Image (cartoon, rainbow, N blue to C red; front, side):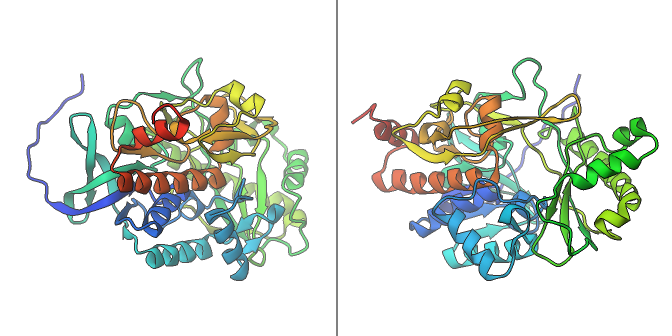
Length: 413
């Protein structure tokens, strides 16, 4: 039995806004900037110390499925101007330059950004979300909002508002493994940008104890992501299985395991100095990379058949063109499936059983397999843009986001 303590306290109201966005990753960036540019008073809450989420805190690159108009194009072109774009598949970027540019975008749009702040739980009146309780150095506060957009990745606010959700693969609830990205320096300048795996194949041949090798860093399809910076690359190799990213204890344990795997990886790099150069550890991420947790059930559920058939919708807000990429919860490798291109409809951003609430990013409503295609950052950014625009449109029309979704789908006049 879990021991519980009851606490009663007065919570000060920090501010009131039109749109409150929880999480400043790609989805949250898209939601906050778009809502603000459309005239809304926006507060953006982020538990890390800089905007960008997995792009910046998690050192995640490349920028997958970014060939889209809007903020995808805007960010891509501005990073090119800053000489911070290129590398692997001409889609990698410098994470520090990304953070600086996103900060400028937020300031320019007039977004009220609150860093080092955890969005803890929704403030509810009945089944309506009226704001979010937050916690930071100032203590416990509440931010009141007309509409809340959950861009936490894990659907924290939606789940705590009572919205139904799915977690992990259908047969056992296991989620894809987490990855601790890390940045290296000292990479040979002549190392080809598209040789993401050749170094690993050579390393596999050279290690004496293959069994121990896989135990030390348990993934056999890693990637070296060459960055635009001289001699720099990101390494996507570590894999932490059987942990849930929406459980605090398991997330912490996963991070510690990830740090150990990074140490092991750096030791193995000594075996291939002739291939990569005398590389060294340049940077660790502030957060571990969580591929999946909750998928909040919405007014529409993106199915496996939608993915396979390339289904389009009258209320489509994002065309997903990334292939299905499942890092297997058990076993060594990953499963990749082709994707003909399918729509994310606005209805899949509208959670069931809670009002004044939208989701964006990887926690939207869809199947385990469909999620493995739309979870990438270009699509997260695009769903965030749509959530921000639709939130403002609903406010301007003085209707709920759910009613707006139904009207735009043609089910209500």
